Length: 246
Image (cartoon, rainbow, N blue to C red; front, side, top):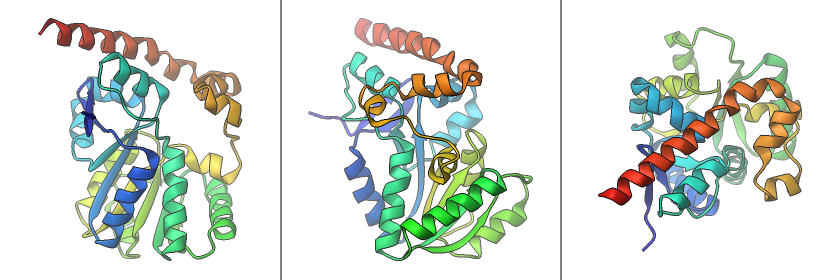
């Protein structure tokens, strides 16, 4: 029997396909439920393992999507296979499609001003029926309560937050504690890709699940971030060994 939640180093991932995630999110939108969506890769899992405050934030999430082939491979290693990788960028595109079809209110926050403006232009052209209720770059004091009020007062159905972890999840947690409905999701560097400032890996690279390698070649400065992968695999191996001995 397929498990609906798969635990990987203490993080409960939702074992759903992209299509199933979007179906659930659409239902919650239409029933005006408040929704904290997290897309987590091995780097986020390891950060949560070493930072309890951030781990506690992730435990508040309504959904945690497996963003990263490392998560899927780990689930197979642990004997509780996740159906498929669900990239955060793909979930964002799916939510934009839903928002366009249903004329939802959307707020965009994060990234550099130039990147954000290009993103907004792209959204307006590709999804003309989205009601863009506001947008703001990510270069402000994230502890400033005035920004939460500013976003809240536009009554968004969806808020895309592009600060990068852990800052985006911290902000989302504070924001959601003050509103009655809507989906809020941290999208990391997705505005850079959507705006065209950063190119996504070609389809054949995506099909071989080596987008991480493509990004590393394009941005060698990501090396330090990638160095967490061997540690992640080591921790998964330990979890597997421990569970087998029980």
